[in-house]
Length: 51
Image 1: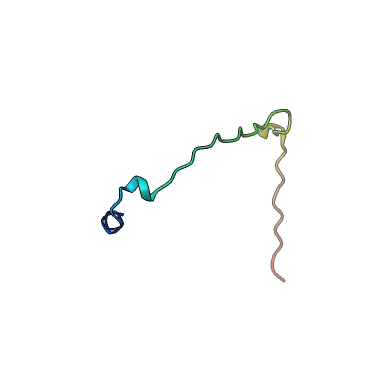
Image 2: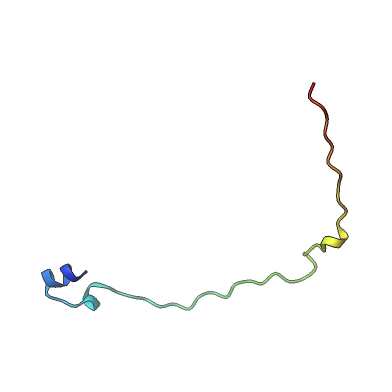
């Protein structure tokens, strides 16, 4: 950037531009959609021999 400033005889602010915008509000998960792990029953894995 310093080389470009020397070539064009300008400042770094002349070569860059910035833009600020308000970020959108993120949605938050609420309600009963979350499953309690204590309520879920485990399933036993089934394995069969090769053949």
